[in-house]
Length: 371
Image 1 (cartoon, rainbow, N blue to C red):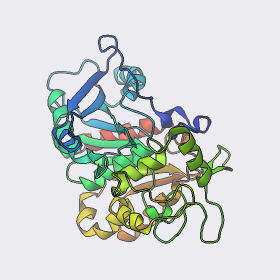
Image 2 (image 1 turned 90 degrees about the horizontal axis):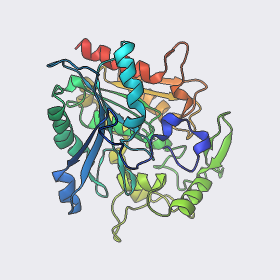
Image 3 (image 1 turned 120 degrees about the vertical axis):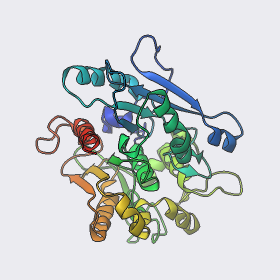
């Protein structure tokens, strides 16, 4: 849930690289991939392309098997994040013994905002297209093992939700997920709002204004009402973060548009839309289908977030943590004291002295090597 409205509150890792012209392939080491999806093109009635930036280990040996780290950016980013990350990754792999993997930066941007790689009546079958079309194509092009243990997911914010969603919806296709500060994973706490029992998103049942945005010191800086008003003023009905959620989770209305979960003027929640959102409630899906999903997800779930998340996303993670503990899951869920949406990535003396991404990549490699 990274928003261009709040650049001063966010670290560079959250924001990603804004979409724009790709660098000259001859002048940089990123392999830029565009692939026309049959499924998405059929849905939209026009050619739709999936995109990625791929960074491969330097001097890869013929026949060298490597896993793929599929990384999904936050709201406002794109696959062009690969251009910023490639020099450091290549240097670390060449000189510092960094995990030799295919680092695949996927593009989740779309006209509605961020499609989250979820099949949606508004955005189309992005998840199915990724699993059935794009990843097999990437594995063919870059000689990657076509097996679950070699398909490892990570993402931050909206990308964190996306990566976790892909893992639970396709547990036999992917070998593990490391989701950081994911967008709400339990809709009983959708950035502070229980969409199932509350009547209004702007004020809680006690009549208190719902706050959304924290500053670096943990103090409240903006309410949900204020956030939505600014988003509408600056970005209109389409392309903002809240509209992006509606496009992924909501039914399509009679006017052909995604139905809003709540009225932007009054905050009134539409209970019919809230019920429809259940099919994307990660915590609810896990609870309802744990007998089947539990064994398939053993050792594969990692969710890490700060307890002062800038967009109060930690509440939903706490609910998910409690539910998974009750179900007997071995999920690795960390709620890090004092960290927010961006500072989560900074070195932590005990948890990740070399930074969060280094820990994620090394854990991925160890899991692959020990398969």
